[in-house]
Structures are given as C-alpha cells and as structure tokens.
Length: 73
Image 1 (cartoon, rainbow, N blue to C red):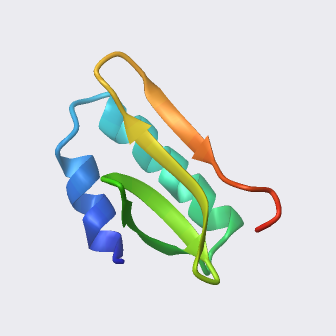
Image 2: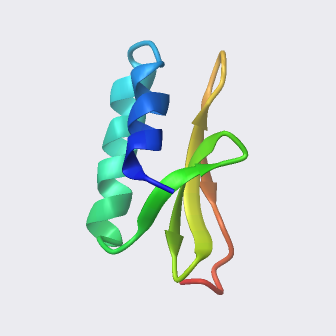
C-alpha cells in the first residue's frame, strides 16, 4: 500500500472530481495522520493497524465516501 497509488487514482480523474476527492483525502489524513494509504479493490482506502477505516471512489455521475466499521475507530 502506498500514497502514490492514491496519487495515480486522483490524477486520472477529471475536475471537479479530482479536487473534491483530494480535499476529502486531506481531511481524512488531518483526522487520522497515522493512516496508511493505498488501493483496495481498485479504490483509495485508509488503514489503521491493518484495518480499513475509510475510503472514497469516483463514478461517472457521483462521488462516494466509504466509511468502514466504527469498531476500528
């Protein structure tokens, strides 16, 4: 897992999707600065202690924030 995977994912998006999801990424990292970043099933995820805690994705007509189990938090 690496932050560069998310960089490539975001770089492939059109505006305003790229900017919007980049801001979401910054927000997640501000809240959980120690989170690992990477892709899982082709979408960006953030992991803490090896468990997915949040993610996001871009589709043709919408963006998604993907919260994961509150037990991880």
